[in-house]
Length: 470
Ligand code: 6PG
Image 1: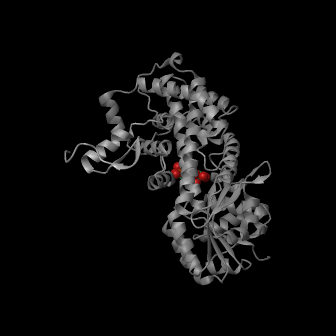
Image 2 (image 1 turned 120 degrees about the vertical axis):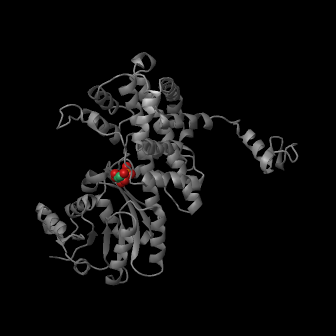
Image 3 (image 1 turned 30 degrees about the vertical axis):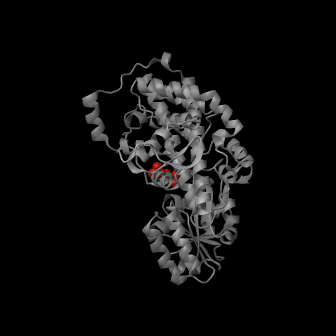
């Protein structure tokens, strides 16, 4: 067996799929998993690809099986396990060898690991890999962070295994340290928001209009042929159309409404506060998952306050209005997400390539959609301009914000929750209000805290005529 070109640790779902993808693209790979039986079973089930896969049963054997300078991918749970694997590998590796964390690491951890690597020890890359099991096997979107030279060493493999958009690999270097995992976290925040907004219009169709899962599936399938074409709309149609293998009815009606979260969306919301980057749609989506998890309280609430009455009726809202509302909310959410990336680029001095970020999201990742190519074009023209101010998207917002307003208003009147879409509407309204109400905030702050304020008719800080009141 010729020596492997790369190694991989962690043969869970994502790791196993990634290893098969790497082997399939012609790169001999050595693999190791903490449980030997898993490694053996993986190799036994690898079919024709087994010839390019070297299963190993010790870390020493893994290292020995890889051609120096080595590169070893970690596909293990984010957090201390990554540090444990780095510690176990380091004494076995030689100068120039590299560890690549391809899990959903918090970018602060990746920054720390990259800084440690810079002091000596193995080289270190942190890459965000998006696309779930299917993406890992047949083409994920890959967002790289670390030293550029280290990325360049393995870029040929990462580009080969990545998704392709019209032949272009969806794998790009984002910047130093944790830049790749940061961009992945923002991807996940947008993912949460996309999913939440789709769930909100699903709620209006189910609880407001009384549509069945099958009818809702047809709506999503129809939308997937239009401006909302995306992986998440596509799979929402699949989920709504699927039959419960046990009861025979729609499986969607049998799924418990308590959302899980591994935490990447939460990290994005936390980081946005540090960056003073308003991502109100993503924050609303994270909060909605937290509220959904409080099922007993919600059950008590319904018993006390009563559920929202069905009977919105199609008169108040049409399916087309919901589609337009979703288009509007999506643009506003992505505008917030890219603005947060811009804020991070400035705060961390990262040369984050916003147009390339939109490009690598066009295929392979969970938020892949038709709109992303236009976003890449808009960001290429003006990387630092808020996406909602780009002519192509300003036009779409002008054409759809009334629908968003009508959808949010009708849902509110009927008690149908739309936290993410209403956050998007509020953001739109704030962003098109040149004279906001923050003057009162400044007056209040100066009244009780003498914090001062600027005047419209002059510069410098002033205080109000309230003396020591308050
Ligand atoms: C992706 C997904 C993936 C996600 C997990 C868990 O890009 O492939 O974002 O990385 O983290 O599916 O997601 P939750 O945070 O919803 O648990």
